[in-house]
Amino acid sequence: MNKPTENKNNIRIVFLLAMLFISVLIYPIDKSYACSCAQPDPPKEALKSSSAVFSGKVIEIVDINKNNEIQSSADPIAILLEVDKSWKGIDKTQVIVFTERSSASCGYGFSLNEKYLVYAYKDGGELRVNACSRTAPLSGAKEDIQALGKGETPAEQVTLDIESIMGQEKSPSESAQNNTQIYIVLIMLILLLTVIIIKSRRKK
Image 1 (cartoon, rainbow, N blue to C red):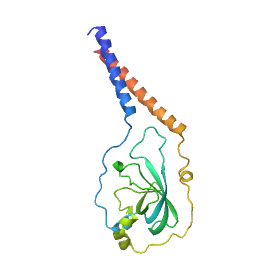
Image 2 (cartoon, rainbow, N blue to C red):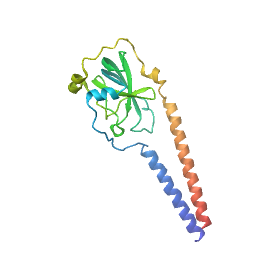
Image 3 (cartoon, helix red, strand yellow):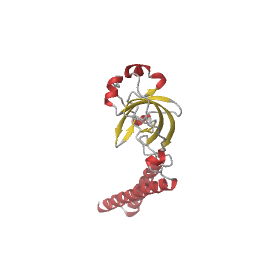
Image 4 (cartoon, rainbow, N blue to C red):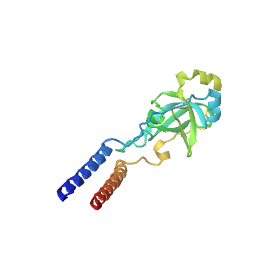
Protein backbone atom coordinates (compact mmCIF):
# COMPACT_ATOMS: atom_id res chain seq x y z
CA MET A 1 0.00 0.00 0.00
CA ASN A 2 1.44 3.38 -0.98
CA LYS A 3 1.55 6.29 1.44
CA PRO A 4 -1.20 8.52 -0.14
CA THR A 5 -3.64 5.61 -0.03
CA GLU A 6 -2.68 4.85 3.57
CA ASN A 7 -3.21 8.48 4.55
CA LYS A 8 -6.63 8.49 2.89
CA ASN A 9 -7.62 5.37 4.83
CA ASN A 10 -6.43 6.93 8.09
CA ILE A 11 -8.44 10.09 7.37
CA ARG A 12 -11.46 7.94 6.61
CA ILE A 13 -11.11 6.14 9.97
CA VAL A 14 -10.83 9.41 11.86
CA PHE A 15 -13.88 10.77 10.00
CA LEU A 16 -15.96 7.69 10.84
CA LEU A 17 -14.97 7.88 14.50
CA ALA A 18 -15.83 11.59 14.57
CA MET A 19 -19.27 10.84 13.11
CA LEU A 20 -19.75 8.17 15.78
CA PHE A 21 -18.89 10.69 18.49
CA ILE A 22 -21.32 13.27 17.06
CA SER A 23 -24.11 10.69 16.94
CA VAL A 24 -23.49 9.91 20.64
CA LEU A 25 -23.91 13.60 21.49
CA ILE A 26 -27.04 14.01 19.38
CA TYR A 27 -28.74 10.84 20.63
CA PRO A 28 -29.07 10.98 24.44
CA ILE A 29 -27.67 8.10 26.48
CA ASP A 30 -30.90 6.43 27.46
CA LYS A 31 -32.28 3.02 28.29
CA SER A 32 -35.09 2.73 25.79
CA TYR A 33 -36.02 -0.85 26.58
CA ALA A 34 -39.71 -1.44 27.24
CA CYS A 35 -40.74 -2.14 30.82
CA SER A 36 -41.95 -5.68 31.41
CA CYS A 37 -44.09 -6.46 34.46
CA ALA A 38 -45.54 -9.63 35.92
CA GLN A 39 -49.14 -9.66 37.11
CA PRO A 40 -49.20 -7.73 40.42
CA ASP A 41 -50.08 -9.54 43.64
CA PRO A 42 -53.60 -9.19 45.09
CA PRO A 43 -54.02 -6.22 47.48
CA LYS A 44 -53.39 -8.05 50.76
CA GLU A 45 -50.29 -9.83 49.42
CA ALA A 46 -49.03 -6.58 47.91
CA LEU A 47 -49.51 -4.97 51.34
CA LYS A 48 -47.28 -7.61 52.94
CA SER A 49 -44.52 -7.31 50.34
CA SER A 50 -44.50 -3.49 50.26
CA SER A 51 -42.54 -1.24 52.63
CA ALA A 52 -45.30 1.38 52.64
CA VAL A 53 -48.91 1.53 51.46
CA PHE A 54 -50.87 4.78 51.66
CA SER A 55 -53.23 7.10 49.83
CA GLY A 56 -52.42 10.72 49.16
CA LYS A 57 -52.44 13.74 46.86
CA VAL A 58 -49.44 14.75 44.74
CA ILE A 59 -48.50 18.30 45.75
CA GLU A 60 -45.06 18.58 44.08
CA ILE A 61 -43.07 16.81 41.38
CA VAL A 62 -39.33 17.47 41.02
CA ASP A 63 -37.24 16.31 38.07
CA ILE A 64 -33.85 15.97 39.79
CA ASN A 65 -31.87 15.90 36.54
CA LYS A 66 -33.92 18.47 34.61
CA ASN A 67 -30.82 20.62 33.95
CA ASN A 68 -28.74 17.78 32.52
CA GLU A 69 -28.15 17.87 28.78
CA ILE A 70 -27.94 14.08 28.73
CA GLN A 71 -30.95 12.43 30.36
CA SER A 72 -32.07 8.86 30.85
CA SER A 73 -35.47 7.23 31.13
CA ALA A 74 -34.18 5.80 34.43
CA ASP A 75 -33.44 9.22 35.99
CA PRO A 76 -35.18 9.60 39.39
CA ILE A 77 -38.24 11.82 39.73
CA ALA A 78 -39.15 12.95 43.27
CA ILE A 79 -42.84 13.02 44.21
CA LEU A 80 -44.15 14.82 47.31
CA LEU A 81 -47.54 13.59 48.52
CA GLU A 82 -49.96 14.80 51.18
CA VAL A 83 -51.00 11.57 52.95
CA ASP A 84 -54.70 10.90 53.67
CA LYS A 85 -54.67 7.30 54.90
CA SER A 86 -51.92 4.82 55.73
CA TRP A 87 -52.06 1.05 55.81
CA LYS A 88 -48.36 0.42 56.34
CA GLY A 89 -45.04 2.21 56.85
CA ILE A 90 -46.27 5.83 56.93
CA ASP A 91 -47.13 7.80 60.09
CA LYS A 92 -46.56 11.35 58.77
CA THR A 93 -48.82 13.70 56.82
CA GLN A 94 -46.31 14.13 53.98
CA VAL A 95 -43.99 11.69 52.25
CA ILE A 96 -41.53 11.72 49.34
CA VAL A 97 -41.32 8.81 46.93
CA PHE A 98 -39.13 8.33 43.87
CA THR A 99 -39.86 6.81 40.49
CA GLU A 100 -38.05 6.58 37.15
CA ARG A 101 -38.53 9.35 34.61
CA SER A 102 -40.20 7.18 31.98
CA SER A 103 -42.49 4.17 31.75
CA ALA A 104 -39.78 2.67 29.51
CA SER A 105 -37.80 2.10 32.74
CA CYS A 106 -40.92 1.11 34.70
CA GLY A 107 -41.44 4.61 36.09
CA TYR A 108 -44.92 5.43 37.34
CA GLY A 109 -46.55 8.50 35.78
CA PHE A 110 -47.76 10.63 38.67
CA SER A 111 -49.77 13.79 37.91
CA LEU A 112 -49.78 16.94 40.01
CA ASN A 113 -52.85 17.44 42.27
CA GLU A 114 -54.10 13.90 41.61
CA LYS A 115 -54.83 11.39 44.40
CA TYR A 116 -53.26 7.92 44.39
CA LEU A 117 -53.16 4.67 46.30
CA VAL A 118 -49.42 4.05 46.54
CA TYR A 119 -47.54 0.79 47.07
CA ALA A 120 -43.87 1.66 47.71
CA TYR A 121 -40.72 -0.30 48.54
CA LYS A 122 -37.51 0.80 50.21
CA ASP A 123 -34.30 1.03 48.19
CA GLY A 124 -31.20 2.62 49.74
CA GLY A 125 -33.28 4.29 52.45
CA GLU A 126 -35.68 5.85 49.90
CA LEU A 127 -39.25 4.90 49.08
CA ARG A 128 -39.61 3.99 45.42
CA VAL A 129 -42.63 3.34 43.23
CA ASN A 130 -42.75 1.63 39.86
CA ALA A 131 -45.30 0.80 37.21
CA CYS A 132 -45.26 -2.89 38.14
CA SER A 133 -46.84 -2.31 41.56
CA ARG A 134 -50.54 -1.93 42.36
CA THR A 135 -50.09 1.85 42.60
CA ALA A 136 -53.08 3.49 40.91
CA PRO A 137 -55.24 6.63 40.90
CA LEU A 138 -57.39 6.53 44.01
CA SER A 139 -60.56 6.81 41.93
CA GLY A 140 -59.72 3.47 40.27
CA ALA A 141 -58.53 1.61 43.38
CA LYS A 142 -61.90 0.66 44.92
CA GLU A 143 -61.04 -3.06 44.91
CA ASP A 144 -57.83 -2.37 46.83
CA ILE A 145 -59.47 -0.03 49.35
CA GLN A 146 -62.15 -2.61 50.05
CA ALA A 147 -59.56 -5.37 50.56
CA LEU A 148 -57.18 -3.26 52.65
CA GLY A 149 -59.81 -1.91 55.02
CA LYS A 150 -60.21 1.45 56.70
CA GLY A 151 -56.58 2.55 57.11
CA GLU A 152 -55.27 5.10 59.61
CA THR A 153 -54.90 8.86 59.50
CA PRO A 154 -51.23 9.91 59.95
CA ALA A 155 -50.58 11.24 63.44
CA GLU A 156 -47.48 13.39 62.87
CA GLN A 157 -47.95 16.70 61.06
CA VAL A 158 -44.91 17.55 58.89
CA THR A 159 -44.04 19.92 56.06
CA LEU A 160 -41.35 18.51 53.79
CA ASP A 161 -39.03 20.33 51.40
CA ILE A 162 -37.90 18.02 48.59
CA GLU A 163 -34.73 19.96 47.73
CA SER A 164 -33.50 20.24 51.32
CA ILE A 165 -34.08 16.54 51.95
CA MET A 166 -32.37 15.40 48.77
CA GLY A 167 -29.54 17.90 49.21
CA GLN A 168 -29.62 20.79 46.70
CA GLU A 169 -30.52 20.05 43.10
CA LYS A 170 -27.62 20.22 40.70
CA SER A 171 -27.26 23.73 39.36
CA PRO A 172 -26.94 24.29 35.57
CA SER A 173 -23.23 24.99 36.02
CA GLU A 174 -22.69 21.71 37.90
CA SER A 175 -24.65 19.80 35.28
CA ALA A 176 -22.69 21.44 32.47
CA GLN A 177 -19.44 20.56 34.23
CA ASN A 178 -20.49 16.92 34.55
CA ASN A 179 -21.52 16.77 30.89
CA THR A 180 -18.22 18.39 29.82
CA GLN A 181 -16.32 15.70 31.72
CA ILE A 182 -18.30 13.01 29.90
CA TYR A 183 -17.52 14.60 26.53
CA ILE A 184 -13.81 14.85 27.37
CA VAL A 185 -13.67 11.18 28.33
CA LEU A 186 -15.44 10.20 25.09
CA ILE A 187 -13.06 12.32 23.01
CA MET A 188 -10.02 10.81 24.73
CA LEU A 189 -11.32 7.28 24.12
CA ILE A 190 -11.95 8.04 20.45
CA LEU A 191 -8.50 9.57 20.01
CA LEU A 192 -6.89 6.61 21.74
CA LEU A 193 -8.78 4.20 19.51
CA THR A 194 -7.76 6.19 16.45
CA VAL A 195 -4.06 6.05 17.39
CA ILE A 196 -4.27 2.30 18.04
CA ILE A 197 -5.91 1.66 14.66
CA ILE A 198 -3.42 3.84 12.79
CA LYS A 199 -0.43 2.15 14.45
CA SER A 200 -1.90 -1.26 13.76
CA ARG A 201 -2.35 -0.45 10.07
CA ARG A 202 1.21 0.89 9.80
CA LYS A 203 2.64 -2.34 11.21
CA LYS A 204 0.81 -4.28 8.53
